[in-house]
Image (cartoon, rainbow, N blue to C red; front, top):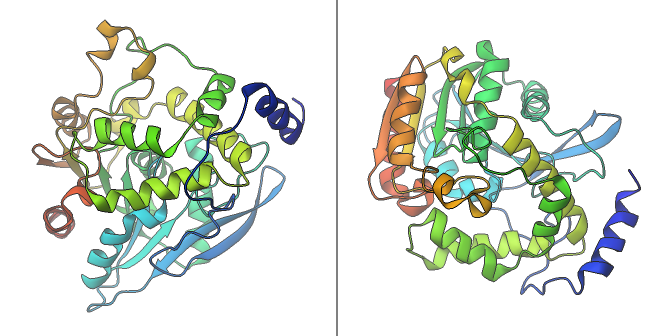
Length: 333
């Protein structure tokens, strides 16, 4: 495979003018303001020097001696956990919110074998560096797939597992969604714009209800994709989408032995590849009102909390309601 830089330049020349974005952030989201100080964990992986951005927020209330690790979704960053970090910290938890390799404030390597196992290993190394031997692992969206893989790899280090509208509750390829190659994903990601991001999230994440506070996260994602690292960001995004589509975790839910809290907005319709699926296939995908219940029967020690009428990100749609349920759930597991 030729050098990514040459590949991207050639592709951009043939693809025409890149989309214009209102904001422009660096390839590691330089210029975007995070809610808490961002530190960086430097390490080697697959022969490359990489760094993971992360927030390490101490307990602001009476410390309970417990740590929570928050794993973000595909179109999210550690920063999008802002309200959750505040709620958990005030409840006495130490909160770690990393940006995974390929995302946000972290490295975006030219070549990387993306797997949920690799990202889990990276995160485990970060926690070891921070001296955290056991933690509650909470994952949202794609972070739910990663949190599941982490818990399967490191059960002794996973005190509790929390899954917030995780994707991967179904195997899209097995249900008939066509395969999209990395090159096809790359071409798609090059065309992202603030308008396309907003429209997708409005229709898929937020059940047609838009709030002004969501604009900040559109700006974050669009500015990253439209900045000087445009092609580099798009290439890593394409590799990550391929990982998500080809590495299901649903078949291994039965092996999770730790207490697991499922927090599900029932009106979510997120399903990778549904935009190119035949109508008969698409109609069967992304029914979280059903998927949440199915997952709760597959996971041995699961507690299901449903948010009727909410979408893909209940922690952002109704923070007070969500965090009350989250804290109650963690205390009762």
